[in-house]
Length: 579
Image (cartoon, rainbow, N blue to C red; front, side):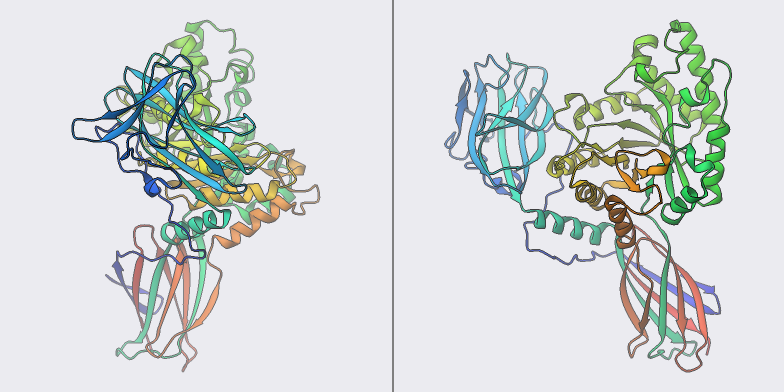
């Protein structure tokens, strides 16, 4: 297409071809593939099994032993596929076992295909360390008659022999296992995966060709390229202190264009006394955000935790609660309709069920339906913790998450909802299990729904800044993640877990990390001289740009805007400059 801009003609050719990544470290490529579907036949072992011996049971059960009081045997499907069966079980850990050696500082990506021979039940992979410690690496809800992918991983804090076990509390069922894989990666290799993914997912390459109106190439034309907006949302929460603190306002607006309010939109903040709604604080924060072109995620319509209801709500009868909740959702969603980019419709719906207990099992689904009716253009999120942070939390594992979200979206009237996956990302102290985090994102990403990390912070630790950087890089680089909001901030605003600035608004080490990543994840303004054909070629982050071309003869300037979109990996832009 051709269009007139700022004194010149712009011809844009979109060519959808793969932009190759540049490998920084030689490494086995990471396999992001995953599925939540239950398949008739298992897929092949990832990484050809990695360090697992006899991963596909081609050699019967060689290399595998029984663990606990059960027994193992070989299984063969009708088409000749071989697998292993743990049977005659009486304890959850009665299963198959293989010993491997884990090396300190390495990440281990695990996968296996599993099923049980009756009904449904959770199956987890457990690493029994030489010390006796049991380390969970992931779990899946297995079924009878089809194979489910169990994908997870661990970080080795120490070098140790470890036994790979499979755990199921459904002890009356057999555990069937096939195509097992355990692939080690160094931290440097893991980082190279992130860099490769960013090159592929967050950037495109563009070739600008400057010519005079008569078609002559402008040799030596000077290009100035400045990014004005990033298409990847990377933001930070804010709280009520920002209303009256110019320093806080300046600190925030300098860095972020996306936000979530910590508490100010929640029910217990807007209606402390029944029937007396007060949106003064929330409205003031919305006004500040809009004045500074900051997009807002709504947090939240309801919170399913009984502890965090308004005090007057906690003892209402079911009929009284239903009426009050209807008023709440009508009020808050209607008030901010069209002004938000997302709503956390029901907060922490896997861990808690206040509204379901009081109003019936479909309470959450009904509120999603009503929120969608009131604000149909805003994405509705199920917002949860520990889905990526902690593989020990069985309630919030990726498969339970999808089961709950499927229940909500399959409720009559909800099929058209624009739904999103909200993962809070409250990491404790100590080394984050990035292998588990990535595998969980793989699983949830296979649904095709947008994933946001909605409340990222990291516990106090001597290495807090390093761990925060690891988590943020993992989120930003993953193909399925569409945005990140941190629940961090300056000390003056009361933040005391992950603090980005001290009381004088000087950066902490964590603040230095965030500023470094903000700079790294945007195109740095460049001045580039064109070659003999009047051309330059350059990779750009997705987003909006101002481009200025300087004629080397007349020194005249021609300005135009350009957008690098997510769906185009390579562009050619022909510029026609008036002499």
